[in-house]
Image (tube, rainbow, N blue to C red; front, side):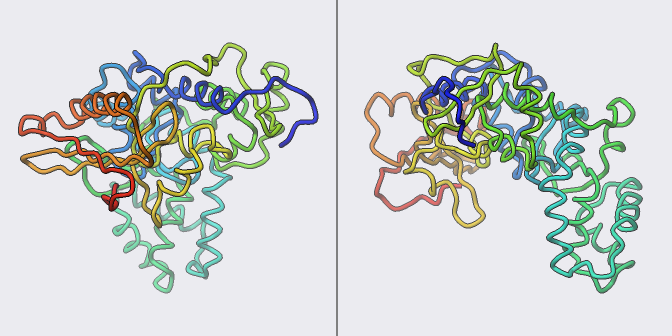
Length: 383
């Protein structure tokens, strides 16, 4: 929304540095893993490894086993929340944020399944009750859930039945799914079954969530938060909070809200290279992504429904990377979008080595290599 009032203007570079600071990407933070997951309002987790790489880029002294231990103790869990996508959340956020964002993208996704007529004749209330009974009895895979629900509605679309259950119920992906170096197929149970009585069943307060969003992603517009959350009509909450917030504008005149005591570093603050996983929320949580995504990189991080891992140079999306892992060797392939100078290459190499030492320690006992894919050469098929 363009503002008719003149507010201080934040340049794209100033927005970039502020957002990187909130995202713990200007310097690695000495935070505990659970505190970091809470601060970031969860980690995008469509695949199992991205939360680990997201934390490796952000936390001082991070080890993958730390996040796995929190998952095994039920302190954090994988669940569908913002934008109807899987996130790794603290237990409290898994319950409270899921309840807050339910009326947004999750309910819209359910409406799509119903509109496809794959659920003709299916009573959604009964579907929710039966699905709950099944996953409370024991965790079920989506396939097992479909098979049981088809006994009640044999004419329904099987995929729509299990996906509708995922929309209707707050279903946690139980371990060992998502554990580092172990993994397993998706199996589901309810949040109250997984967390027990220790986590209150409450909906996150929308005003409090606005404040938390700005602390992790600000300065930001109303549309930015709506993009992150999958909710609509959030302007009322921002207007309630306006007296407590600072208001800026970007170079297009869009109002940007922020917390008075939030960091807004000088735009010349150095931004070190960072290797981020596919679907990192840094790239998905603003309506206007130009604070991080350059025009050259806008269409290069996706291919069909496949997302690529990316790296940042000077705070901006600058290329792709992927790992080839065998028992004998770990190879990191780096594919810049454009030419990089010798100094940037050296910084990238140092960060790549650090990432490998955190995330592929066993592979290092057999050796590793880092390979640059020069701009203009055939694509490596980065994933």
